[in-house]
Length: 211
Image (cartoon, rainbow, N blue to C red; front, side):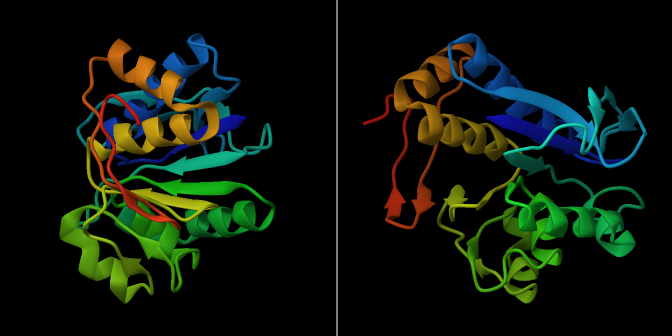
């Protein structure tokens, strides 16, 4: 499984690095995956919402991704760089539409879900984002699931804000590689998993010891 986390100027650092940490640990524990930080163009380094410099491994499209993760950042305050700015530009939303059409699953972390929704990928579908943007998510055509921390609708996955990025990544590990590896990763990073997770089967509680 090839996972790419798509960086852009003003993205929230933990939204990108949190999932990267989870997937890197999952790979070390035996999950058959590769994870890389990418950018949509030739820019190799971005500055996050809180000022940290993050260096990408490669540009988008160098390898076909099975899963593309979009971080949040910069929506609520309409920052000149971040999700709001990316939606106004339109190049990132076009990339998501194209990637999804080619068979890549998309995950939106925090207000990264607003970029996914703006790409038309959440029309009529259940989703969640940072609680401050749930009304905006609905206005974009999604069905907000505010009671869920992670919403897994198959080829599109979303989660709540900030640390929910870890729960999204751990859920993907559990779904695709098993609860044992997910729990081992949570133990390794000393994180107590939180739920609930919504799937097409309904809400399910998630804890650090999976059922």
